[in-house]
Image (cartoon, rainbow, N blue to C red):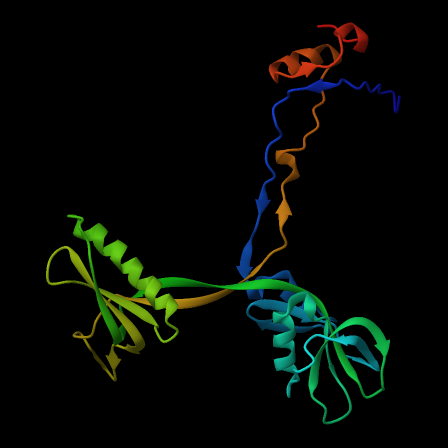
Length: 273
């Protein structure tokens, strides 16, 4: 008995299985990620490194400290930015970057902390988040396509409008795979059931001085590259772990509704139906 409440164990079996765990994974534009906000907080001396596939923050430089192990013994870097970028890519295998005496190069380190010469500088990794590249598209009537390559995609559909949408999405995916491609221009082919897709290796304004080029291709789909960072995984425990508060006389009815079987006779557990 605790706080006037009486607890009684009711052994049961054959109840419905619990709901599966629900995991929510959220991606944010990397500049909106909490790691960036923490590094930008007033008074924070953290150093930020946003280089795919990882967004990482590092503690302020410390003098006279080093780590006992080397992450990649054969690698060293001229600049701090290069070292931070490679350390982030290695994940947990790299815990810090270290530079020794004047003129030495930056190295990737891991392991336990130890004392070093006063001239040694160490940047210890704080936290990291995985990054991914996404694409967004918008239509522009004021930009002209500088053609790079073209492809024809046939469709058996009799609806030329829906066929155009499907085929143009194929061209968009091709453009996303080509780093030179800046946009896509989709045009109806010679017949009514095909679409000519032009990948734009460049975009230029349709304005030339005070004149407007009406012959240039319009309605260009412009590609925008967006880098996102993952948020910590959150598990919704309430979907499968809930507490039910019911009156004692209603316990058996609820167990019957759930199709649970009692392991002990009702008389032995002191419950009345």
